[in-house]
Image 1 (cartoon, rainbow, N blue to C red):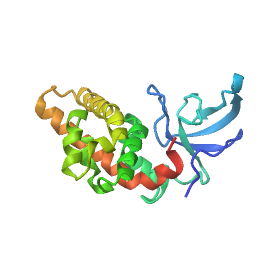
Image 2 (cartoon, rainbow, N blue to C red):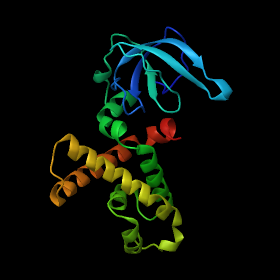
Image 3 (cartoon, rainbow, N blue to C red):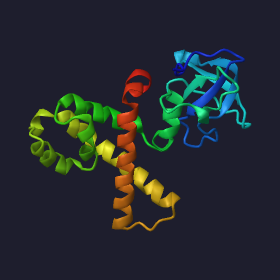
Length: 209
């Protein structure tokens, strides 16, 4: 498996997996050449100046963006096997590019460690707000007061999902109705759960902040 976010030197060829900049014009799968390593002042780390194949010159920021080395220039990133990290990220690119998945994965990991449900049952905990979280915990045999960390995180998770629902409604030029909201909401949760179940090991090993 390709190493995620290796240190880079001028001349290295890379493949972009994710760029945090919401206005980025460098899509997933774009290749580029490292021009130089820019050391930031005051101990703020570094950035990589990249000449992207699509003409962009946006810099790569360690800790925010994701990349792998392009070890085989003949290999298309879109031809990677589904078991490969690159292939998996392309499969889930809608979640990676549009959703704050770090916050959601942190919440789901907290839920997993609570022992209330297993990973496959976690979807119901994405569908509710703080008010109904009490009822759900009781329903699965738990005591709400034993899980304050879930209540601390549920509002942020809920807002992230709802913001993505609104984004999709606007992108698809759909009227904001209860029917459309519920339809997109359920599809969004399904995509997040697929990401969670398929990318859990890779996320915990390579992405967790």
